[in-house]
Every structure is written in structure tokens, then in C-alpha cells.
Image (tube, rainbow, N blue to C red):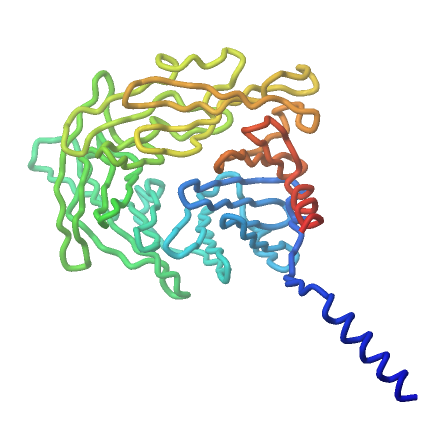
Amino acid sequence: MNKWITLILVLLIGTTSCVDEIDLRPFELPSLTKSTVRRVEAFELDSALFVATDEGVMLLYGDEQILFDAGSYDELLEIEWTNAEVLYAPTTDIFWVIADSAFLRVGRNTFDLHYDRTNFYAPTKSYFDYALSPDGKLYRLGYYDEVWDPNSGSFFSDYMIGIYEFIGNPNNTWKETQTDLGVKSKFLADPTFVFAENGDLIINTNPVYVVTSFNQSEVVADSNSKTGSGFKFRTSYQPYLSETGHMYGLFSEPTFLTPVVAVVDHALNEEEVRLHALDENCEIPSSSQGAVKLLDWQSDQARFFVQVFSSPQTGESEELGYIMTFDLASDQCSLRSLRSHPDLKWSEGINDLDILGDKVYIGTREELMVYDLKTDDVTSYLFNAIENLSVQ
């Protein structure tokens, strides 16, 4: 009897020594990407991606995937994604989504939805903008009052700029700082703005203001009035401050129906404002709908998606569109075609897209797809996730 026990022990010891240790980690399949994709926003410098679908939200931080299924987070079903603004704070790894009065914060361990009930100054409540500070705080700029001196002899009034910091508690959404910085009514426009890396707040109105410090007691700022050649500068949209000290922005907000026509450019310490017209500097194919989305700013370059419309009725096209790179320092353009594929024959089904590294993430009516710029291959994001899981 003892010899059989000894034999069993030897076999168990021998078998145990041959077993490899495997680190098993839970992996959730991104099945929510196999539904209508409403929004795709990439932040290339930070290797971050935001995707909103009818089934939920997916975040990518490099190779790390975070999922918020609408079945568990039904608040996501209330958000109108198409016209929402999506911002990303790399210092906190938080994505901000602003859709009308809804303010959504999502991240690795963050999900918070807040509704803004603030009664802003009624005559100008439709003029505003949002931006994130270097430390990841959300700010809003708007106008809090109109001032007119009847003895000045002028027909123009001044609209006074307010700076609002998001605090998001149940009783109050914003902490207000009223400034004495004004914009005359003839230049009234959205007070778009950015933060410089050093924390300066740059208000992209006419005049342009560089706010070096502000609190509810004091605001310190310099101003510089702007003049444009052949046009009146009021503001520019989706502004960006380049490393060379130029403030770039779009002449108008682009949509899939109203493409970008020009980029606005001015140096902070100069009065002149320049327009870089796309049709004068870029050979945009006549079959396209123009530059319908700004993908990103990189130094003195802007990248756009130029869409070519195709559908079953028009027949298959060789191109879905182009990635256009516009060098604003030299007014030179280059186009990189996105070719149609058996799995994506027509651009009609594209709702949104953005670029991250050598991949273009394409949101369609049916699912999230990935276009490889190295090979021109198009694959399903969900299929790639399953395939990668099977080889691990």
C-alpha cells in the first residue's frame, strides 16, 4: 500500500513542476463598439481616444481600455453626442463631454454627470466657450453685462467678459470672476480661449487679452487690438496656441454639411490677422465635400478630414476621403487618401472619425472600424479585440 502512495506523490510532484504559471487578468470585450457610433475624438499627443456609441462609451489610454455600458450607465442615453464638445485633461486622465446643460466627466475610476441650471446674462447667454487649464480644471468664458455710456457719442456698447470655474456642486455650477475686460458690440462673438502652458489665459476676441492672473478680487491682463486684411476679425473657433507663438483657429465651426473654408492666424504681439484660405492653397478634389472636421493641431500644421461622398446610389468610389495636412507657415498642403474597402465601400455610413498614430478610428452606422495607414486595410475594432485575445 505504501509503495502506491509513494508512486502517487512522485507523479504529483513531477506533474506540478511542469506546469507554467499564467497570469489571468479579466478582459471585457468591447461589444458596445458593435453598434451605431456617434462620436470619435482622439488626442494624439496623449495617446487617448474617446468613442461614444448607442450602447455606451469606450475610453482608450494607449492599450488600456475602459468601458461604460449604457445598460449600467443609462445616463449616457440622455446625451446628444453629435453636437457635444469633448475635451481631455492629460494631467487627470479625465474626458469632459459638454452637451447643452449636461457636463459629463469620465475616466478610469470616474463617472459623473452634472446638469447646469445657471441663469447666465440673457442677452449674450448664447456667446460662450469652454477650455481646460493645465491642471485639468474646466473653465467657461461668457459675457456678464452690457455697458453703454450715452455721453460717449458712440453707438457701440461694451460687453464685459466673465471667467467661470467649474465647481459642479448641487447648488452652484460655477465660481464667477467678473472682469473689466470688454468687447465692443461691433466685435461681439464667442469669446473663445486657450490656456498657455504657463497658465496664462488667452482670450481670442478683438482685442485679444492675455490674462496673467485672475481671482475674484483682481484680474491682470494685457490687450492687443487686431485688424484683418479684407475682413473684420471677431474671433476664431477651436483655437490653438502653437510653439511659435501663433494663435490659430478656424474661420467658422465645421460640420459635415458646412466645411472649413479658412484658418485664422495671428501672433499675440502683432495687430495683423491673416486668413489662410483652403481653396487657394490646397488642391481639394472637386468630388469632395471639403474639410469637414479638424483632426488636430501640431505646431504650425493643421490636419483635416476631407470627405468624398459615396453611397450605393452613386456607386463605389476608390476613396472614402483624405487626410489633409496644411502647413500654415508655408501655405503648403498634402493629401493622403483613405481608400474604400470591401468592408467599408461607401462614405455615406461614416458618422465620425479621428486619427491616432498610424490608425484612423472610423465610426459608422454599424460599428467602430480601424483603418491602418500603413497597409490601407480596414478591420472591425471588435474583431481585432477578439483576435488579439485569442493569441495571448
